[in-house]
Length: 351
Ligand code: HEC
Ligand code: HEC
Image 1 (cartoon, rainbow, N blue to C red):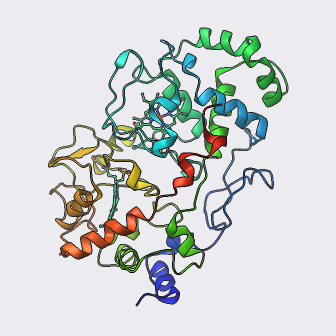
Image 2: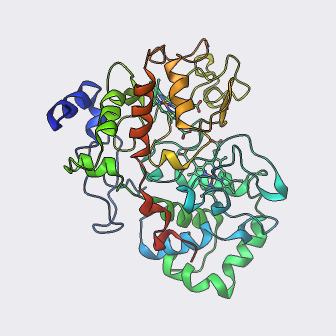
Image 3: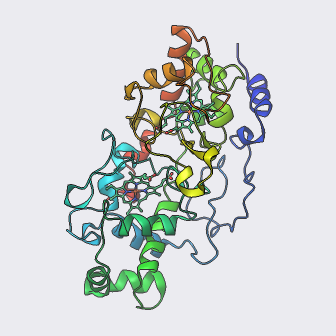
């Protein structure tokens, strides 16, 4: 039977990252702590990192929330950030494999969840943006996402409708696109949630997980499955780039597009598994050589079979020999990572 001691032991076996689940403040990156009580961070999560030039204030977050839901930021007035990052889907675009932006333009990748995105050290599946501010600017300007007309947006932000909120957020009325993105990034930094049954278990409620889910958890964090080696830490990601053998040829070259290093061909950022049951289909492109990956069973079966042979495939992805019952245990554990309070929290909804 699993108990707290063996589980903690296994976490540490897999490296310090996993211990972030239990301890506060174990991030290595230099961080500037946000104002003491805002936003409210669950006690077992690290402090939200905030860049020194974009202090997190309630007024900026409120402006950011309005902008996150503002369709007039897009050239056609039809698409907002929330069109592809929907609260009822943990801020992902499930069940769409790829998203449609302005003019129905089709993107090439699956829109990730934004829950706890504040903790990520880089953004996009290939890590090409270093800050949430830069990431938002990229989406705002992208021809397949919002394709913003910046002059029209500037006029909107200077109008009566936004003047008060803007003044409250920035203490003057100078409108820049950079500031608009700073406000959106501030809102995103408040999308912090950690009240899944797994969190409750970590916080000491031994009844929060069923026996099957506990078996799945122990297998997940074991050297046998190696899931926890990449999906460890408070958000079940190591924030690194790996190849897990989804294709034998990668049309989307992933991290390679950023580094031009052949060893990065086909590598993608390990995604957080928080709320993973809500964000199907899975993976950067939502599919694999074997077709769409729409269920967690299919994902575990992918790992169980050791993936498709590919030069850069990570050695930890190899035939696992899991029984059907063990596959079901892993799936049950991942389903316990859902925090349904995120789906309806009023402070994250359209204003
Ligand atoms: C047309 C759909 C669409 C719109 C509109 C959109 N996004 Fe995204 N978003 C995506 C997709 C698809 C990705 C993954 C793209 C990639 O990795 O290349 C993504 C990635 C992200 C990420 C990176 C998350 C991570 O963990 O790496 C953030 C943050 C984000 N979007 C925020 C925003 C914000 C803020 C806006 C509005 C300014 C926005 N998005 C508008 C589809 C969209
Ligand atoms: C070598 C590191 C590594 C290991 C080991 C690993 N993963 Fe992953 N995982 C990743 C990466 C990287 C992705 C994204 C891959 C892509 O899109 O190309 C991913 C994607 C996923 C996804 C889809 C997430 C989403 O948002 O689309 C799930 C679910 C998942 N892994 C579960 C598991 C389970 C269960 C195990 C153990 C059986 C495991 N992973 C082992 C690195 C790893």
